[in-house]
Length: 236
Ligand SMILES: Nc1ncnc2c1ncn2[C@@H]1O[C@H](COP(=O)(O)OP(=O)(O)O)[C@@H](O)[C@H]1O
Ligand SMILES: [Mg+2]
Image: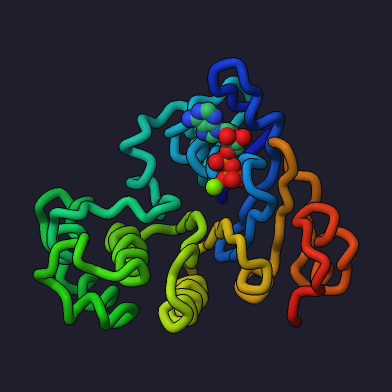
């Protein structure tokens, strides 16, 4: 459904993505892992049309994304939860949820996202900046869900969030995937990533250097150590 072929991105004179290739199949949940600064966020931004490509091809359900304006990409069915969440701090929870729905409320869908994240329902009229970090992350995911995406792309959704909410967010990501939505997850927490995602891509310096299953990585500590710099074996 999502296919990246030899994607290059330059920022100024820097060659940030140097030929990224991978794909996500319908219903699949995949993790994109790698050390800080290898280009994970840039890869996601390239998919969303927010980082200009200098080469290669990205397509979604057969549509070449280079022919689609960035603001129209979510309408094709790709939801993006950027690193740092990107909610509107001065808008209420309800206003944030309906930002993409062009003024029309979809109460059936609202009920679905409140079922996923009951904390949001209790905070409908609160403005975004009064929510905790974990609640803001839930709101960012919920806002994507309002658009009924086929694929959700999440950039470090549990970064800096208190453990209680991390497990809730993790559980909901799993449940969203179970409902048939594909997931592309960038995650610093390797254990979380391997638990949630049967397929894993490892990046190093602007390229995907390894693609395999989470099961392979759980037993292949050498690869995990080499590309992620972890000496500890991730929990099964
Ligand atoms: N707007 C930018 N200007 C200059 N350099 C950037 C910019 N965005 C990213 N980079 C650089 O590109 C590299 C990859 O960044 P990023 O995609 O954010 O990595 P990751 O998400 O894997 O930590 C880093 O070296 C970063 O400093
Ligand atoms: Mg990043």
